[in-house]
Amino acid sequence: MFKRIKEDVEVVFDQDPAARNAVEVILTYSGLHAIWAHRIAHFFYHKKFFFIARVISQLSRFFTGIEIHPGAKIGRRFFIDHGMGVVIGETCEIGDNVTVYQGVTLGGTGKEKGKRHPTIKDNALIAAGAKVLGSITVGENSKIGAGSVVLKDVPPNSTVVGIPGRVVVQDGVKINKDLKHNELPDPVSDRINKMELELSKLRNEIEGLKKEGVQ
Image 1 (cartoon, rainbow, N blue to C red):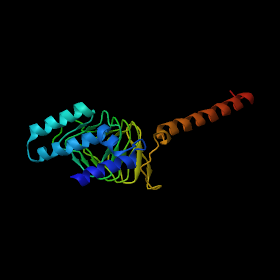
Image 2 (cartoon, rainbow, N blue to C red):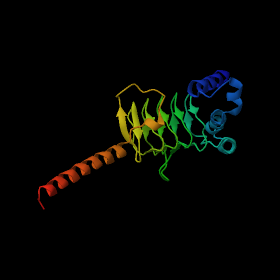
Image 3 (cartoon, rainbow, N blue to C red):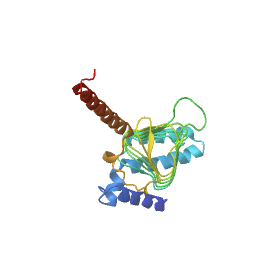
């Protein structure tokens, strides 16, 4: 238990440059508190003490602003940065070394039964406000851009942005956990820019024809 606690604290220092010392991290990081509370709730959920598990989960939500269903399966070195508004559903499965930012939802798409929440593979990163919905899989080393809505499987080593989410980088470069939210490619904006260039060319051609006296 103490080894896991130490590991959780070390992940904070690895991922958050604002972390100063262990005492500050242990006492003030709500993401860390939510993960620890979830482990206790998940233990009771696994033992079929569902009511106790939900009570612990709701108390954690009240104090941290992070809602993790006690049935969710979470791997090692999971890091929640800031965390307010994070929601993780009952059948969600999260691998090792996963990072999520504030406002992320790992949710379902309706009232379907069985596996209805996402599976997040090892080393994935999900940026602020992203929504990953349904029984889909986000592959290893993949990144979900801020504000994206992901409704389909994401291949490993990919970067996804937009609504709905589109894969814009796959196996192109080595994937690191240093996603720069303000430098993500925007396929919609790129397409609009291309259309504007084409319209500009057409206007120039029309002006040229008018000058030549062609009606």
